Image 1 (tube, rainbow over the protein chains, first blue to last red):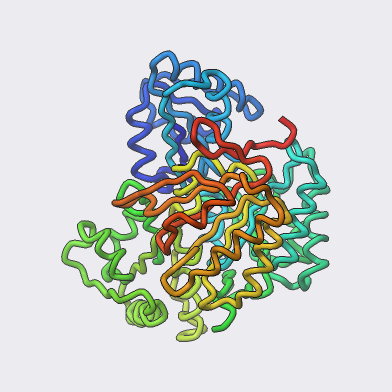
Image 2 (cartoon, one colour):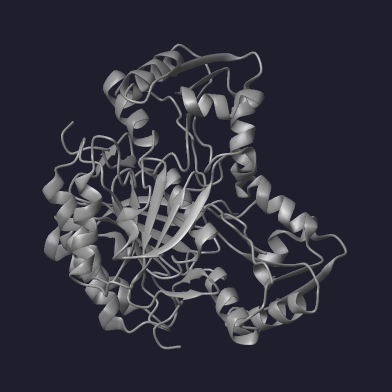
Length: 241
Length: 241
């Protein structure tokens, strides 16, 4: 099983995710997420490791599952959105191409909609989701996607917007949108959605790159219709209302 | 409160959504969704109505809330993705611009990730979400977004893909993507995700419009990297692996 934990605490987890964790014999995950669900794990076997160890964790999980154990790989948010679901399926296919092992993926609340709910309702119309991490994706492809999202008037959600090692990408992203949208276009920024230290800012396209954006942050850039109502971001459902 | 019910049954609902429903004095929603949660409502007051009555339901909910009642407006999936969250905030702003009424939005698992989990892991890289309904959005804007999503190599999720009254939009969408992607590009189609009568098809760009796609269906069009592994759609996390 690949289990989405939602944005943070237990209140964001689905009943299906809780049930899947209850059934697992081994729980595999990034150590920070394992700590978030420590109370639910009890005395069961845990395989945890660091942030860049995703591939090795998936291999261990697949080995354990092929040996007959019921394994839950945990992933924050939704496991299919920049999460572990794809890697588990890829590793399984390489390790045992004809395996009949059943992999159940339990969806979760992804950071885009968790952040949107805290900001108001910025995603009520068409939107694009783009990761600014160029660790596994060429930067020129990411730039092309930012251009297309800006030109298509998509509300745009940025995952992995900035890290210690990646400072210029967010500024470049902002510049691309400034070519297509006014500088006062609303931008919402949420850090630690659903977790301790949650912070929510309503900003705009001119100013948002000055906020303390990091890897725990989700950025939502409004489109031409997004407005601020009572301090909250709202993109109307229709263009004809 | 605006509460996301997730894709269908109680197992897709978060603990936070269950808690919000438990606290509500009045529950407001589309009658089909009210039936899905009838067991959770008990004897409490319900305001339910039909599919095109969203605006009137929001007005009733806001009136009740301004009169002091604790109201939960329910919305399937995530209430911020083509859901009721935006409309509630808009109606409140019109009805009582200076109101201090607190509106809490409880996110849920949206159809895009619920469908993706059943198909495999098609959304593991950047994606766009587009509704094909031109009831409130000009069709030429929807076409522009489809073009931009296709040109940006976004995995693309189609909401509201086809209804009795809207038959040609899905075919046109398919034709736009066929200009930019090979006809064998994987396409996943999920009907009634998480509900009775759930159906999952793995198809391709040439053939998917022939499937029984309707308003209860979510369509996910793969990008240039999406593959079929053991019968499941997978978009790899990186372009450099």
